[in-house]
Length: 255
Ligand SMILES: [Zn+2]
Image: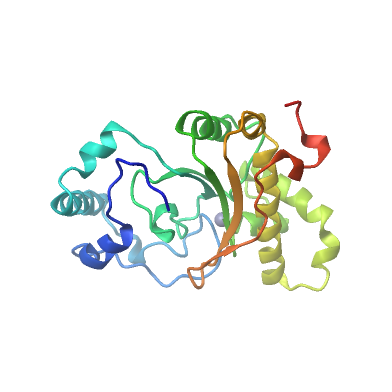
């Protein structure tokens, strides 16, 4: 991975090896199920005091400063990330941590089920700033197996406002329903997780933001990955796009 010239040489792996766990670290409970926002998978006992988080933060900052006294001063002056990460809000998929990147190395947007919605001003603002101003060179759409948002979209349970956010997933399932015929529930959820990543990669590239970047010759590659909560490993879905001639003509704007 190429870091900007002023970025630190430290890696998260180095830090984890030497500094973690925090003193009296919060122990993760055994996890089950795939809810993005359910109670399973959260910390044991549910009695973690927020003061503990602030204490952890002080330990983290002091430890980092001890190894690299200039670290925060450099970051405060500039961020120059190579990557934009578009991922799920699920607490089990922390962006920087699972790809071993430090603060300053990953620009991040997360929402339930890692959706790319053409009318989402939050997402569009992140993408535009990342591409036009920060000039990230790679965009990563990373879903995960067992996604609770995807699971909800495959069910008929009414969860509230979020049902509207997830409805595009129902449409995606409907378009591909013949592929789900022989699958059990878990396999169906995971197939839709993969289809969703592939769709969102295309949605990123259908924006005028990405197409204008390509038109002016800016290098920009969009990847589709999926993370396995059960083994911690990321799989590349080989759905990478990097040029307008890889898109269907329907979605192209005049260059
Ligand atoms: Zn999820």
